[in-house]
Image 1 (cartoon, helix red, strand yellow):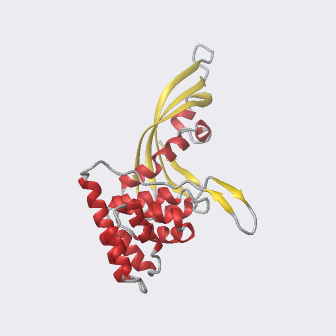
Image 2: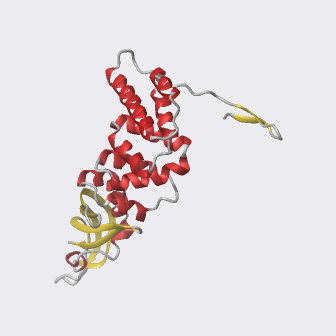
Image 3: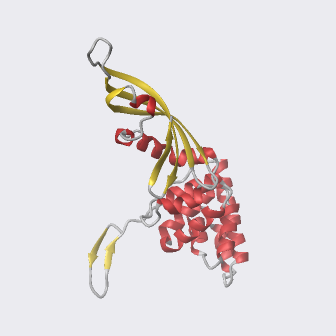
Length: 256
């Protein structure tokens, strides 16, 4: 809808019709995507009760993958297990098209289905994209997310949380009370002026843990020397931080 032009017992609005952008001619990948989406829709008809026979004729004539995906998204009278099985079988590109239509047209039904699917799927690419979509929902918090993603492989965890760890460990305030002893004993008023996260490794399982290499720029006043005066030093120091992700964010357990 572009704008509402009349409010009352009979409402009127100015609307803009959105049209699908056709792919290049003879795009084999696109044709294969449309075909699989059509086959998935026909499979849905077999599973869903009370679908009229005319639906088969309609599906045979649809060439727009957006309309095919919309048909799938609208046919939500399957039980949860059947819906999840259908999502699991879809080709990745078809899955993305379907989820897009689902979120657009059935947002209240989409979230619980997507959460349930993400919690069970073994396809890390689909899981990653499901989480990215769920993150747009303000009610989907980090605690809910971690319960799903902690079983991901290390590569998927990196894609999901690399930016988070970079941002959190790159905050110099994090290091005020976490400097290792070998730095603290170098002088008085030791402070970190910059933190650069160079490398991060993730592991899943019962929790999401990380191991990060961080280069710190350190400023300090050195202890009195044998000449009887203190000095000032600025230098770089590399540390290894280990920790885990929780509902509250990044938790550092050890710094060496």
